[in-house]
Length: 228
Ligand SMILES: *[C@@H]1O[C@H](CO)[C@@H](O)[C@H](O)[C@H]1NC(C)=O
Ligand SMILES: *[C@@H]1O[C@H](CO)[C@@H](O)[C@H](O)[C@H]1NC(C)=O
Image (cartoon, rainbow, N blue to C red):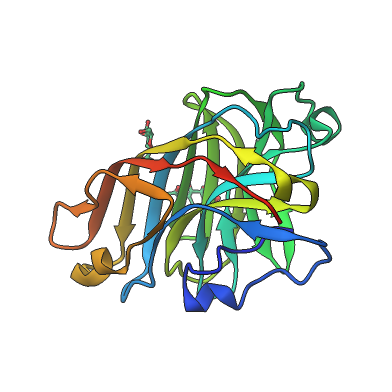
């Protein structure tokens, strides 16, 4: 159902969804990869903005995603729908959020309402005993949705603002990703050089241990108006 920012990673571009949306567009992003290692764990907190305007157009998605060697896209989602009640029981002005992996089809955990101002912590961690990525979405610290998928190994991580159909004529408010931490399987000092940014800015993307653990405390995604 969801596909990828066009400039993220060459390896990710192959994953573009083949399902039938009439229009798909991508806005701002903060994108990393591919790493020469692989990503064991990723943690970030998306602070939800107000829903896009005009309101209630299908469909606008915010997500931090990881493209994998298995051809999957691990992508916990926050989506603004034309009918939020029908999708997750949300009221007008709310988002729906859930753990999700694009694996040919869109797999997902429970879909729950979330409000502007909520902190959605999207946590992905490779589980050595199962070979799966365990994914959770927490709202203000409480786990609300989870999903585990065998997806291979994650090669990059990036944020996306994705419009589909009528939402490709809307304005998405600025929003932030806080306390982002990416842990690689082994040190890759060149990982920082893979950063690509569009209509976004951030505090420094730094490593505390010569390339295995990478952090960025604040990513500011700018407001974006789609006109597709
Ligand atoms: C992920 O980030 C949140 C928010 O900073 C933090 O509360 C939580 O402990 C982190 N979880 C893990 C597993 O790192
Ligand atoms: C790995 O997955 C198993 C099975 O779901 C689970 O019991 C275990 O707690 C997970 N390991 C970690 C470190 O989370």
